[in-house]
Length: 460
Image (cartoon, rainbow, N blue to C red; front, side, top):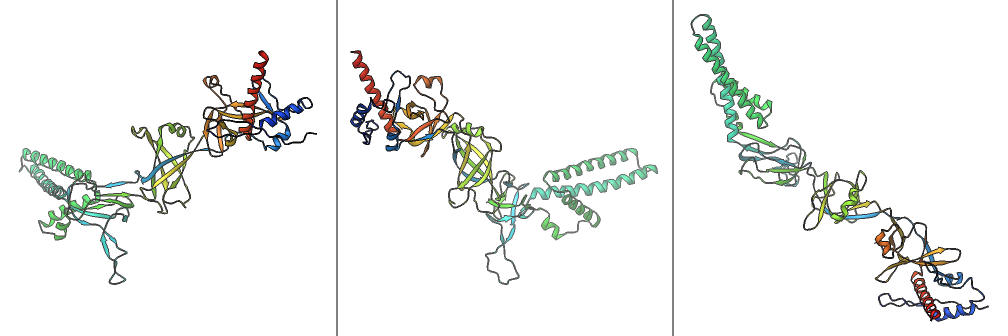
Protein backbone atom coordinates (compact mmCIF):
# COMPACT_ATOMS: atom_id res chain seq x y z
CA UNK A 1 0.00 0.00 0.00
CA UNK A 2 0.89 3.54 -0.46
CA UNK A 3 2.71 4.42 2.86
CA UNK A 4 4.22 7.79 2.35
CA UNK A 5 4.05 10.59 4.86
CA UNK A 6 1.51 13.26 3.91
CA UNK A 7 2.65 16.86 4.37
CA UNK A 8 -0.05 19.52 4.17
CA UNK A 9 1.18 22.69 2.57
CA UNK A 10 -0.47 26.06 2.37
CA UNK A 11 0.57 29.66 2.22
CA UNK A 12 -1.05 32.24 4.51
CA UNK A 13 -0.13 35.90 4.42
CA UNK A 14 0.40 36.91 8.06
CA UNK A 15 2.52 40.00 8.33
CA UNK A 16 4.96 38.74 5.71
CA UNK A 17 5.53 35.34 7.36
CA UNK A 18 4.85 32.20 5.30
CA UNK A 19 3.90 28.87 6.76
CA UNK A 20 3.56 26.06 4.30
CA UNK A 21 3.22 22.32 3.76
CA UNK A 22 3.67 20.66 0.43
CA UNK A 23 0.31 21.19 -1.23
CA UNK A 24 1.25 19.37 -4.49
CA UNK A 25 1.97 16.24 -2.47
CA UNK A 26 -1.43 16.49 -0.80
CA UNK A 27 -3.04 16.84 -4.22
CA UNK A 28 -1.10 13.86 -5.55
CA UNK A 29 -2.07 11.80 -2.51
CA UNK A 30 -5.73 12.69 -2.94
CA UNK A 31 -5.66 11.82 -6.67
CA UNK A 32 -4.11 8.37 -6.06
CA UNK A 33 -6.53 7.35 -3.34
CA UNK A 34 -9.71 9.23 -4.20
CA UNK A 35 -11.36 6.13 -5.59
CA UNK A 36 -10.16 3.59 -3.03
CA UNK A 37 -10.67 5.67 0.08
CA UNK A 38 -13.39 8.19 -0.60
CA UNK A 39 -14.46 8.19 3.02
CA UNK A 40 -10.97 9.13 4.30
CA UNK A 41 -9.73 11.86 2.00
CA UNK A 42 -9.62 15.55 2.78
CA UNK A 43 -12.92 16.85 1.48
CA UNK A 44 -14.68 20.15 1.05
CA UNK A 45 -18.43 20.23 0.56
CA UNK A 46 -19.23 23.61 -1.10
CA UNK A 47 -22.96 22.99 -0.76
CA UNK A 48 -22.83 23.25 3.04
CA UNK A 49 -23.32 26.61 4.74
CA UNK A 50 -20.10 26.00 6.69
CA UNK A 51 -17.52 24.22 4.51
CA UNK A 52 -15.54 21.74 6.52
CA UNK A 53 -12.19 20.06 6.34
CA UNK A 54 -11.99 16.33 7.02
CA UNK A 55 -8.58 14.85 7.86
CA UNK A 56 -7.22 11.35 7.96
CA UNK A 57 -6.24 10.16 11.44
CA UNK A 58 -2.73 9.59 10.11
CA UNK A 59 -2.47 13.23 9.00
CA UNK A 60 -3.61 14.42 12.42
CA UNK A 61 -1.01 12.24 14.13
CA UNK A 62 1.89 13.08 11.85
CA UNK A 63 1.26 16.81 12.03
CA UNK A 64 0.67 16.77 15.77
CA UNK A 65 -2.73 18.39 15.52
CA UNK A 66 -4.21 18.73 19.01
CA UNK A 67 -7.56 20.02 20.23
CA UNK A 68 -8.67 21.71 23.44
CA UNK A 69 -12.07 22.12 25.01
CA UNK A 70 -13.67 25.57 25.19
CA UNK A 71 -14.36 26.33 28.86
CA UNK A 72 -15.42 29.01 31.24
CA UNK A 73 -12.69 31.48 32.26
CA UNK A 74 -10.39 29.61 34.62
CA UNK A 75 -8.90 32.59 36.35
CA UNK A 76 -10.49 35.69 37.90
CA UNK A 77 -9.78 38.95 36.23
CA UNK A 78 -7.51 41.16 38.27
CA UNK A 79 -7.78 44.92 38.29
CA UNK A 80 -4.55 46.61 39.40
CA UNK A 81 -4.75 50.11 40.85
CA UNK A 82 -1.90 52.45 41.74
CA UNK A 83 -1.99 54.55 44.87
CA UNK A 84 -0.29 55.41 48.13
CA UNK A 85 -0.65 55.25 51.90
CA UNK A 86 -1.89 58.25 53.87
CA UNK A 87 -2.72 59.07 57.46
CA UNK A 88 -6.09 57.73 58.48
CA UNK A 89 -8.27 60.89 58.57
CA UNK A 90 -10.48 59.26 61.21
CA UNK A 91 -7.55 59.25 63.64
CA UNK A 92 -5.91 62.56 62.65
CA UNK A 93 -6.25 65.10 65.46
CA UNK A 94 -5.60 68.83 65.01
CA UNK A 95 -4.33 70.38 68.25
CA UNK A 96 -5.10 74.09 68.58
CA UNK A 97 -5.12 76.66 71.34
CA UNK A 98 -8.52 77.37 72.89
CA UNK A 99 -7.68 81.07 73.09
CA UNK A 100 -4.88 83.29 71.74
CA UNK A 101 -1.67 83.71 73.65
CA UNK A 102 2.05 83.01 73.80
CA UNK A 103 3.72 79.60 74.04
CA UNK A 104 5.89 79.81 77.15
CA UNK A 105 6.88 76.18 77.40
CA UNK A 106 6.88 72.96 75.38
CA UNK A 107 6.02 69.56 76.78
CA UNK A 108 8.83 67.20 77.74
CA UNK A 109 9.56 63.61 76.74
CA UNK A 110 12.33 61.22 77.68
CA UNK A 111 15.35 61.36 75.38
CA UNK A 112 16.74 57.82 75.08
CA UNK A 113 19.62 58.97 72.86
CA UNK A 114 21.01 61.57 75.21
CA UNK A 115 24.18 60.94 77.19
CA UNK A 116 23.25 60.59 80.85
CA UNK A 117 25.47 61.77 83.66
CA UNK A 118 24.03 59.14 85.96
CA UNK A 119 22.05 56.03 85.16
CA UNK A 120 19.26 56.98 87.57
CA UNK A 121 18.43 60.31 85.94
CA UNK A 122 16.47 60.47 82.71
CA UNK A 123 17.23 63.31 80.33
CA UNK A 124 14.23 65.23 79.06
CA UNK A 125 13.81 67.16 75.83
CA UNK A 126 11.06 69.14 74.14
CA UNK A 127 8.42 67.23 72.23
CA UNK A 128 9.21 67.08 68.54
CA UNK A 129 8.13 65.71 65.19
CA UNK A 130 7.35 61.96 65.16
CA UNK A 131 7.33 61.65 68.96
CA UNK A 132 4.74 59.27 70.30
CA UNK A 133 2.50 60.77 72.99
CA UNK A 134 -0.39 59.49 75.07
CA UNK A 135 -3.80 60.99 75.70
CA UNK A 136 -3.67 63.80 78.26
CA UNK A 137 0.09 64.38 77.91
CA UNK A 138 1.10 68.06 77.98
CA UNK A 139 2.38 69.18 74.58
CA UNK A 140 2.83 72.89 75.33
CA UNK A 141 1.93 75.59 77.85
CA UNK A 142 0.13 78.73 76.71
CA UNK A 143 0.12 82.09 78.51
CA UNK A 144 -3.19 83.81 77.69
CA UNK A 145 -4.14 87.30 78.75
CA UNK A 146 -7.75 86.63 77.78
CA UNK A 147 -7.89 83.63 80.06
CA UNK A 148 -6.42 85.63 82.95
CA UNK A 149 -8.99 88.34 82.44
CA UNK A 150 -11.90 85.90 82.34
CA UNK A 151 -10.72 84.13 85.48
CA UNK A 152 -10.29 87.48 87.21
CA UNK A 153 -13.75 88.50 86.05
CA UNK A 154 -15.19 85.32 87.54
CA UNK A 155 -13.41 85.94 90.86
CA UNK A 156 -14.52 89.55 91.06
CA UNK A 157 -18.09 88.66 90.20
CA UNK A 158 -18.19 85.93 92.84
CA UNK A 159 -16.70 88.20 95.53
CA UNK A 160 -19.18 90.95 94.67
CA UNK A 161 -22.04 88.48 94.71
CA UNK A 162 -21.18 87.19 98.17
CA UNK A 163 -20.77 90.72 99.53
CA UNK A 164 -24.11 91.83 98.09
CA UNK A 165 -25.83 88.73 99.46
CA UNK A 166 -24.67 89.69 102.97
CA UNK A 167 -25.87 93.25 102.43
CA UNK A 168 -29.26 91.95 101.31
CA UNK A 169 -29.58 89.71 104.34
CA UNK A 170 -28.78 92.63 106.68
CA UNK A 171 -31.26 94.93 104.92
CA UNK A 172 -34.00 92.37 105.24
CA UNK A 173 -33.30 92.13 108.95
CA UNK A 174 -33.35 95.91 109.28
CA UNK A 175 -36.58 96.01 107.28
CA UNK A 176 -38.16 93.76 109.87
CA UNK A 177 -37.02 96.18 112.55
CA UNK A 178 -38.44 99.06 110.50
CA UNK A 179 -34.97 100.59 110.13
CA UNK A 180 -34.41 99.98 106.38
CA UNK A 181 -36.89 101.01 103.72
CA UNK A 182 -38.54 98.65 101.27
CA UNK A 183 -36.88 100.49 98.42
CA UNK A 184 -33.42 99.70 99.80
CA UNK A 185 -34.33 96.01 100.03
CA UNK A 186 -35.56 95.96 96.44
CA UNK A 187 -32.38 97.69 95.23
CA UNK A 188 -30.16 95.21 97.08
CA UNK A 189 -32.17 92.29 95.66
CA UNK A 190 -31.74 93.65 92.13
CA UNK A 191 -28.00 93.97 92.69
CA UNK A 192 -27.75 90.35 93.86
CA UNK A 193 -29.72 89.17 90.82
CA UNK A 194 -27.35 91.05 88.49
CA UNK A 195 -24.30 89.58 90.22
CA UNK A 196 -25.69 86.05 89.96
CA UNK A 197 -26.30 86.55 86.24
CA UNK A 198 -22.79 87.92 85.73
CA UNK A 199 -21.29 85.01 87.72
CA UNK A 200 -23.22 82.48 85.62
CA UNK A 201 -22.11 84.20 82.38
CA UNK A 202 -18.43 84.23 83.45
CA UNK A 203 -18.62 80.59 84.46
CA UNK A 204 -20.23 79.56 81.14
CA UNK A 205 -17.59 81.49 79.20
CA UNK A 206 -14.90 79.33 80.78
CA UNK A 207 -16.97 76.23 80.06
CA UNK A 208 -17.22 77.29 76.40
CA UNK A 209 -13.42 77.36 76.39
CA UNK A 210 -13.49 73.68 77.41
CA UNK A 211 -12.55 74.35 81.05
CA UNK A 212 -13.64 71.49 83.24
CA UNK A 213 -15.96 72.02 86.20
CA UNK A 214 -13.08 71.13 88.51
CA UNK A 215 -10.90 73.87 86.98
CA UNK A 216 -13.70 76.41 87.34
CA UNK A 217 -14.25 75.34 90.95
CA UNK A 218 -10.53 75.99 91.58
CA UNK A 219 -11.06 79.58 90.38
CA UNK A 220 -14.10 79.85 92.67
CA UNK A 221 -11.97 78.57 95.57
CA UNK A 222 -9.51 81.38 94.92
CA UNK A 223 -12.40 83.81 95.18
CA UNK A 224 -13.30 82.30 98.57
CA UNK A 225 -9.72 82.69 99.74
CA UNK A 226 -9.61 86.33 98.69
CA UNK A 227 -12.97 86.91 100.36
CA UNK A 228 -11.71 85.46 103.62
CA UNK A 229 -8.12 86.67 103.65
CA UNK A 230 -8.28 89.85 101.63
CA UNK A 231 -5.93 90.69 98.76
CA UNK A 232 -2.96 88.78 100.16
CA UNK A 233 -0.56 87.91 97.31
CA UNK A 234 -0.02 84.28 96.23
CA UNK A 235 3.15 84.02 94.06
CA UNK A 236 2.33 80.48 92.95
CA UNK A 237 -1.14 81.49 91.91
CA UNK A 238 0.17 84.48 90.01
CA UNK A 239 2.55 82.27 88.04
CA UNK A 240 -0.23 79.84 87.14
CA UNK A 241 -3.12 82.27 86.71
CA UNK A 242 -2.91 82.74 82.92
CA UNK A 243 -1.12 79.49 82.07
CA UNK A 244 -3.02 76.89 80.06
CA UNK A 245 -1.62 73.39 79.40
CA UNK A 246 -2.28 72.17 75.87
CA UNK A 247 -2.78 68.41 76.12
CA UNK A 248 -2.86 65.60 73.61
CA UNK A 249 -6.51 64.77 72.83
CA UNK A 250 -5.62 61.17 71.99
CA UNK A 251 -2.73 58.72 71.89
CA UNK A 252 -0.74 58.96 68.70
CA UNK A 253 2.33 60.23 66.89
CA UNK A 254 3.15 63.88 66.27
CA UNK A 255 3.13 64.07 62.47
CA UNK A 256 3.21 67.87 62.31
CA UNK A 257 4.63 70.47 64.69
CA UNK A 258 4.19 74.19 63.97
CA UNK A 259 5.17 75.80 67.24
CA UNK A 260 8.29 76.77 69.18
CA UNK A 261 8.71 78.35 72.58
CA UNK A 262 7.92 82.08 72.59
CA UNK A 263 5.71 82.19 69.50
CA UNK A 264 2.37 84.01 69.56
CA UNK A 265 -0.51 81.81 68.43
CA UNK A 266 -4.22 82.19 67.79
CA UNK A 267 -7.12 79.79 67.81
CA UNK A 268 -6.88 79.04 64.06
CA UNK A 269 -3.32 77.70 64.11
CA UNK A 270 -2.61 73.97 64.09
CA UNK A 271 0.02 73.71 66.81
CA UNK A 272 0.34 69.95 66.43
CA UNK A 273 -1.19 67.15 64.38
CA UNK A 274 -1.48 63.72 65.91
CA UNK A 275 -2.12 60.53 63.95
CA UNK A 276 -2.62 56.93 64.97
CA UNK A 277 -0.13 55.12 62.73
CA UNK A 278 -1.36 51.67 63.74
CA UNK A 279 -3.91 52.05 60.93
CA UNK A 280 -3.31 53.81 57.61
CA UNK A 281 -5.51 54.86 54.74
CA UNK A 282 -5.08 53.46 51.23
CA UNK A 283 -5.88 55.88 48.40
CA UNK A 284 -5.94 54.26 44.94
CA UNK A 285 -6.70 55.70 41.50
CA UNK A 286 -9.42 54.04 39.42
CA UNK A 287 -9.96 54.74 35.71
CA UNK A 288 -13.53 55.76 35.04
CA UNK A 289 -14.10 52.80 32.69
CA UNK A 290 -13.21 50.41 35.54
CA UNK A 291 -15.63 51.91 38.07
CA UNK A 292 -18.45 49.65 36.91
CA UNK A 293 -16.46 46.53 37.79
CA UNK A 294 -15.89 47.75 41.36
CA UNK A 295 -19.53 48.76 41.81
CA UNK A 296 -20.64 45.23 40.85
CA UNK A 297 -18.47 43.59 43.51
CA UNK A 298 -20.40 42.06 46.42
CA UNK A 299 -19.93 43.42 49.92
CA UNK A 300 -17.47 43.48 51.50
CA UNK A 301 -15.37 44.69 48.58
CA UNK A 302 -11.82 43.47 49.19
CA UNK A 303 -8.42 44.11 47.67
CA UNK A 304 -4.85 42.96 48.22
CA UNK A 305 -2.29 45.66 48.94
CA UNK A 306 1.32 45.31 47.80
CA UNK A 307 3.97 47.82 48.90
CA UNK A 308 6.13 48.81 45.93
CA UNK A 309 9.25 49.43 48.02
CA UNK A 310 8.86 46.14 49.94
CA UNK A 311 8.80 43.41 47.25
CA UNK A 312 9.43 40.58 49.72
CA UNK A 313 6.45 41.47 51.88
CA UNK A 314 3.32 39.35 51.70
CA UNK A 315 0.27 41.17 50.22
CA UNK A 316 -2.01 42.61 52.87
CA UNK A 317 -5.74 42.08 52.68
CA UNK A 318 -8.01 45.09 53.08
CA UNK A 319 -11.48 46.42 52.32
CA UNK A 320 -12.63 49.16 49.99
CA UNK A 321 -14.57 51.57 52.19
CA UNK A 322 -15.83 53.87 49.46
CA UNK A 323 -15.20 55.19 45.95
CA UNK A 324 -15.14 58.91 45.31
CA UNK A 325 -17.99 60.54 43.40
CA UNK A 326 -15.76 62.97 41.47
CA UNK A 327 -13.78 62.15 38.31
CA UNK A 328 -10.55 64.06 37.85
CA UNK A 329 -11.04 66.04 34.60
CA UNK A 330 -7.38 65.68 33.61
CA UNK A 331 -6.56 62.06 34.46
CA UNK A 332 -10.18 60.79 34.24
CA UNK A 333 -9.78 58.84 37.43
CA UNK A 334 -11.73 58.50 40.66
CA UNK A 335 -10.30 57.73 44.09
CA UNK A 336 -10.95 54.54 46.01
CA UNK A 337 -10.38 54.57 49.77
CA UNK A 338 -9.69 51.82 52.27
CA UNK A 339 -7.76 51.10 55.44
CA UNK A 340 -4.85 48.83 56.20
CA UNK A 341 -3.53 47.47 59.48
CA UNK A 342 -0.11 48.74 60.58
CA UNK A 343 -0.01 47.48 64.14
CA UNK A 344 3.56 46.22 63.58
CA UNK A 345 4.77 49.67 62.41
CA UNK A 346 6.17 48.28 59.16
CA UNK A 347 4.42 50.75 56.85
CA UNK A 348 4.82 54.48 56.42
CA UNK A 349 2.44 57.14 55.13
CA UNK A 350 3.39 58.24 51.63
CA UNK A 351 4.57 54.83 50.40
CA UNK A 352 3.44 53.84 46.91
CA UNK A 353 1.21 50.78 46.77
CA UNK A 354 -0.51 48.53 44.25
CA UNK A 355 -4.05 47.44 45.03
CA UNK A 356 -5.20 44.27 43.25
CA UNK A 357 -8.93 43.56 42.96
CA UNK A 358 -10.43 40.32 41.69
CA UNK A 359 -13.47 41.36 39.68
CA UNK A 360 -16.39 39.33 38.42
CA UNK A 361 -15.91 37.90 34.95
CA UNK A 362 -18.39 38.46 32.12
CA UNK A 363 -20.70 35.39 31.95
CA UNK A 364 -20.76 35.65 28.13
CA UNK A 365 -17.04 34.89 27.76
CA UNK A 366 -15.29 31.57 27.14
CA UNK A 367 -11.62 30.70 27.31
CA UNK A 368 -9.42 29.10 24.64
CA UNK A 369 -5.63 28.63 24.37
CA UNK A 370 -3.79 31.51 22.72
CA UNK A 371 -2.40 29.12 20.08
CA UNK A 372 -5.94 28.29 18.98
CA UNK A 373 -6.51 31.82 17.70
CA UNK A 374 -5.39 32.65 14.14
CA UNK A 375 -5.21 36.34 13.32
CA UNK A 376 -4.05 38.17 10.20
CA UNK A 377 -4.73 41.74 11.27
CA UNK A 378 -8.23 41.70 9.74
CA UNK A 379 -10.06 38.85 11.39
CA UNK A 380 -9.73 36.45 14.31
CA UNK A 381 -10.42 32.81 13.46
CA UNK A 382 -10.51 29.52 15.34
CA UNK A 383 -10.75 26.03 13.87
CA UNK A 384 -13.63 24.15 15.51
CA UNK A 385 -13.92 20.37 15.46
CA UNK A 386 -17.58 19.74 14.57
CA UNK A 387 -17.43 15.95 14.35
CA UNK A 388 -14.80 14.17 16.47
CA UNK A 389 -15.60 10.80 14.88
CA UNK A 390 -14.92 12.03 11.33
CA UNK A 391 -12.23 14.59 12.28
CA UNK A 392 -14.14 17.38 10.60
CA UNK A 393 -13.11 20.99 11.20
CA UNK A 394 -14.68 24.32 10.29
CA UNK A 395 -13.34 27.84 10.38
CA UNK A 396 -15.18 30.27 12.61
CA UNK A 397 -14.67 34.03 12.92
CA UNK A 398 -14.93 35.08 16.57
CA UNK A 399 -15.02 38.23 18.64
CA UNK A 400 -12.05 38.50 21.01
CA UNK A 401 -12.77 40.25 24.31
CA UNK A 402 -9.40 40.05 26.03
CA UNK A 403 -5.98 38.48 25.59
CA UNK A 404 -3.56 37.01 28.08
CA UNK A 405 -0.19 35.43 27.54
CA UNK A 406 -1.48 31.85 27.37
CA UNK A 407 -5.27 32.16 27.00
CA UNK A 408 -7.73 34.29 25.05
CA UNK A 409 -11.28 35.23 26.09
CA UNK A 410 -13.84 35.00 23.28
CA UNK A 411 -17.49 36.09 23.33
CA UNK A 412 -20.13 33.38 23.45
CA UNK A 413 -22.95 35.86 22.93
CA UNK A 414 -22.99 38.37 20.09
CA UNK A 415 -25.15 41.31 19.18
CA UNK A 416 -27.13 41.44 15.94
CA UNK A 417 -24.66 43.95 14.56
CA UNK A 418 -21.73 41.62 15.29
CA UNK A 419 -23.49 38.74 13.56
CA UNK A 420 -24.07 40.92 10.49
CA UNK A 421 -20.31 41.46 10.39
CA UNK A 422 -19.85 37.71 9.95
CA UNK A 423 -18.82 36.91 13.51
CA UNK A 424 -19.93 33.70 15.21
CA UNK A 425 -20.28 32.56 18.80
CA UNK A 426 -18.02 30.04 20.44
CA UNK A 427 -19.66 27.96 23.16
CA UNK A 428 -18.49 26.18 26.25
CA UNK A 429 -17.74 22.50 25.62
CA UNK A 430 -16.84 22.83 21.94
CA UNK A 431 -13.46 21.58 20.74
CA UNK A 432 -11.00 23.91 19.03
CA UNK A 433 -7.65 23.16 17.40
CA UNK A 434 -4.95 24.24 19.83
CA UNK A 435 -1.97 23.01 17.81
CA UNK A 436 -1.87 23.31 14.01
CA UNK A 437 -4.74 25.81 13.71
CA UNK A 438 -2.81 28.06 11.34
CA UNK A 439 -2.04 25.19 8.96
CA UNK A 440 -5.61 23.88 8.99
CA UNK A 441 -7.03 27.32 8.26
CA UNK A 442 -4.66 27.69 5.32
CA UNK A 443 -5.56 24.22 4.01
CA UNK A 444 -9.28 24.97 4.26
CA UNK A 445 -8.85 28.32 2.51
CA UNK A 446 -6.88 26.77 -0.30
CA UNK A 447 -9.35 23.89 -0.62
CA UNK A 448 -12.19 26.38 -0.91
CA UNK A 449 -10.22 28.18 -3.61
CA UNK A 450 -9.72 24.95 -5.51
CA UNK A 451 -13.43 24.15 -5.19
CA UNK A 452 -14.37 27.60 -6.44
CA UNK A 453 -12.08 27.25 -9.49
CA UNK A 454 -13.56 23.84 -10.25
CA UNK A 455 -17.09 25.22 -9.99
CA UNK A 456 -16.26 28.12 -12.32
CA UNK A 457 -14.69 25.73 -14.83
CA UNK A 458 -17.76 23.51 -14.78
CA UNK A 459 -20.01 26.48 -15.51
CA UNK A 460 -17.95 27.47 -18.48
